[in-house]
Image 1 (cartoon, rainbow, N blue to C red):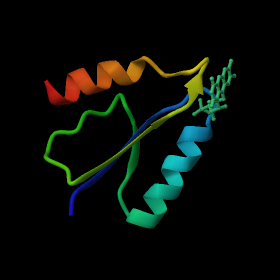
Image 2 (image 1 turned 90 degrees about the horizontal axis):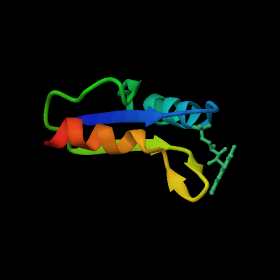
Image 3 (image 1 turned 90 degrees about the vertical axis):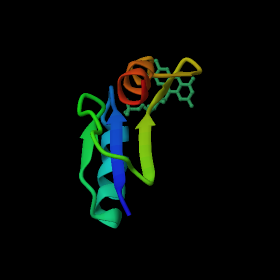
Image 4 (image 1 turned 45 degrees about the vertical axis):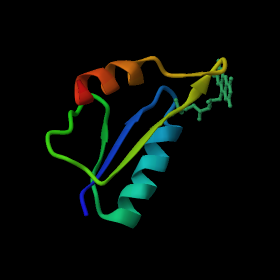
Length: 67
Ligand SMILES: Cc1cc2nc3c(=O)[nH]c(=O)nc-3n(C[C@H](O)[C@H](O)[C@H](O)COP(=O)(O)O)c2cc1C
Protein backbone atom coordinates (compact mmCIF):
# COMPACT_ATOMS: atom_id res chain seq x y z
CA UNK A 1 0.00 0.00 0.00
CA UNK A 2 1.41 3.39 -1.01
CA UNK A 3 1.11 6.03 1.68
CA UNK A 4 2.13 9.68 1.42
CA UNK A 5 2.36 12.21 4.23
CA UNK A 6 2.47 15.92 3.52
CA UNK A 7 2.13 18.89 5.83
CA UNK A 8 2.37 22.63 6.00
CA UNK A 9 3.27 24.07 9.37
CA UNK A 10 3.66 27.59 10.65
CA UNK A 11 4.30 26.86 14.33
CA UNK A 12 5.54 23.24 14.23
CA UNK A 13 2.53 21.28 15.49
CA UNK A 14 1.53 19.79 12.15
CA UNK A 15 5.13 18.69 11.61
CA UNK A 16 5.12 16.86 14.93
CA UNK A 17 1.86 15.10 14.07
CA UNK A 18 3.16 14.18 10.62
CA UNK A 19 6.25 12.67 12.21
CA UNK A 20 4.12 10.55 14.53
CA UNK A 21 2.14 9.27 11.53
CA UNK A 22 5.46 8.61 9.81
CA UNK A 23 6.70 6.48 12.71
CA UNK A 24 3.46 4.46 12.74
CA UNK A 25 3.21 3.94 8.98
CA UNK A 26 6.88 3.80 8.06
CA UNK A 27 6.33 6.41 5.33
CA UNK A 28 8.40 9.57 5.23
CA UNK A 29 6.70 12.80 6.25
CA UNK A 30 7.50 15.70 3.95
CA UNK A 31 6.34 19.27 3.55
CA UNK A 32 3.91 20.19 0.80
CA UNK A 33 6.87 21.52 -1.16
CA UNK A 34 7.59 17.90 -2.05
CA UNK A 35 5.36 16.69 -4.89
CA UNK A 36 3.88 13.20 -5.12
CA UNK A 37 4.91 11.51 -8.32
CA UNK A 38 3.16 8.16 -8.01
CA UNK A 39 -0.39 7.03 -7.18
CA UNK A 40 -1.05 6.71 -3.46
CA UNK A 41 -3.71 4.72 -1.61
CA UNK A 42 -3.72 7.00 1.42
CA UNK A 43 -2.68 10.63 1.62
CA UNK A 44 -2.22 12.18 5.05
CA UNK A 45 -2.39 15.95 4.56
CA UNK A 46 -2.20 18.29 7.48
CA UNK A 47 -1.88 21.92 8.47
CA UNK A 48 -2.99 24.22 11.23
CA UNK A 49 -6.24 26.16 11.17
CA UNK A 50 -5.78 29.90 11.37
CA UNK A 51 -8.77 32.20 11.79
CA UNK A 52 -11.16 29.47 10.69
CA UNK A 53 -9.29 28.50 7.52
CA UNK A 54 -6.63 25.96 6.73
CA UNK A 55 -3.45 27.27 5.24
CA UNK A 56 -4.03 28.52 1.72
CA UNK A 57 -0.83 26.86 0.58
CA UNK A 58 -2.76 23.61 0.53
CA UNK A 59 -4.71 24.96 -2.41
CA UNK A 60 -1.52 25.23 -4.36
CA UNK A 61 -0.60 21.71 -3.31
CA UNK A 62 -3.86 20.22 -4.55
CA UNK A 63 -3.58 22.08 -7.82
CA UNK A 64 0.02 21.06 -8.34
CA UNK A 65 -0.47 17.42 -7.45
CA UNK A 66 -3.76 16.52 -9.06
CA UNK A 67 -4.18 18.78 -12.07
C1 LIG B 1 -3.43 33.62 14.93
C2 LIG B 1 -3.96 32.21 15.14
C3 LIG B 1 -5.24 31.89 14.73
C4 LIG B 1 -5.76 30.59 14.97
N1 LIG B 1 -7.03 30.29 14.57
C5 LIG B 1 -7.54 29.05 14.81
C6 LIG B 1 -8.88 28.72 14.42
O1 LIG B 1 -9.60 29.52 13.86
N2 LIG B 1 -9.33 27.47 14.68
C7 LIG B 1 -8.56 26.53 15.31
O2 LIG B 1 -9.05 25.42 15.55
N3 LIG B 1 -7.27 26.82 15.67
C8 LIG B 1 -6.76 28.04 15.45
N4 LIG B 1 -5.47 28.33 15.82
C9 LIG B 1 -4.65 27.29 16.40
C10 LIG B 1 -3.74 26.64 15.34
O3 LIG B 1 -4.53 25.96 14.37
C11 LIG B 1 -2.80 25.64 16.04
O4 LIG B 1 -1.87 26.36 16.80
C12 LIG B 1 -2.11 24.74 15.06
O5 LIG B 1 -1.46 23.72 15.79
C13 LIG B 1 -1.10 25.47 14.20
O6 LIG B 1 -0.53 24.52 13.30
P1 LIG B 1 1.04 24.53 12.97
O7 LIG B 1 1.76 24.51 14.31
O8 LIG B 1 1.28 23.28 12.19
O9 LIG B 1 1.32 25.77 12.18
C14 LIG B 1 -4.96 29.62 15.61
C15 LIG B 1 -3.64 29.96 15.98
C16 LIG B 1 -3.15 31.23 15.76
C17 LIG B 1 -1.72 31.58 16.17
